Length: 128
Image 1 (cartoon, rainbow, N blue to C red):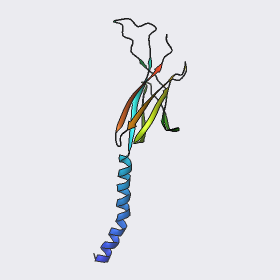
Image 2: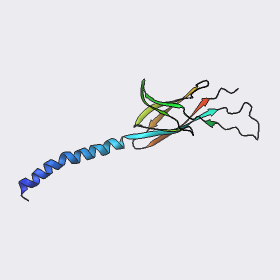
Image 3: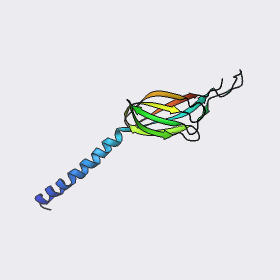
Image 4: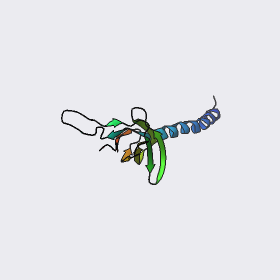
């Protein structure tokens, strides 16, 4: 292959290689928040020796906000668990129990680039 032909091939490949590299950089800037929504108290009366742990909240509404902007919304699974894929950065994660008193719980999280932040949100069950 002549030098001019090699230069042309390299010139054609540079944008492709650049696109691949920028895609990799974008993937490294994303992360996720993963967690569980629980409800407590779960027993009207707690007694010593009779555990009464918080219970999962299936179908809880979970939102991620950045400042005043809602950037994502998911519904917790049957086990109260959720995962939201987001760009790296600081967010407020809020869970709202559906039905009943519809109480909320929030937490501030920082998602690392390429990592996962975990959070447990406990809403009020309304049991007194």
